[in-house]
Image 1: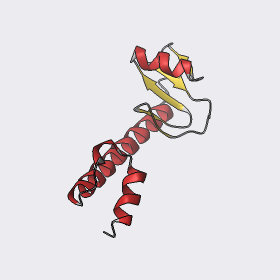
Image 2: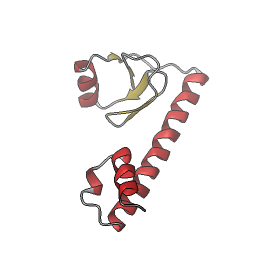
Image 3: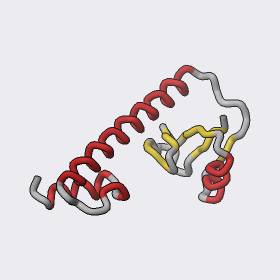
Image 4: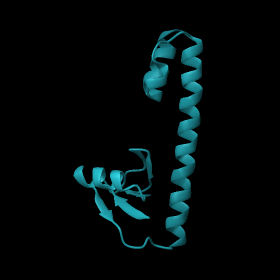
Length: 104
């Protein structure tokens, strides 16, 4: 699996569906690797570290991604239940704002 290193070494979050922790993510999707390279990320295709700390960071990032996905799913359901159009295409922040504006 290749390492993707973000220009912002402190970035922790999700980018193009890849979880990042402290500026580092991993994927073996060649299309995404080329996309990241085109956006200024560094791609390291050498063998990944077996450092336990790196493994823990990756696990934490994956857990964060799962929690974010769960939150987004719940917001989309609530928005749909409230009749907010296009909920399936909106991000969590937009949905929260629209749900709040609906007064619910």
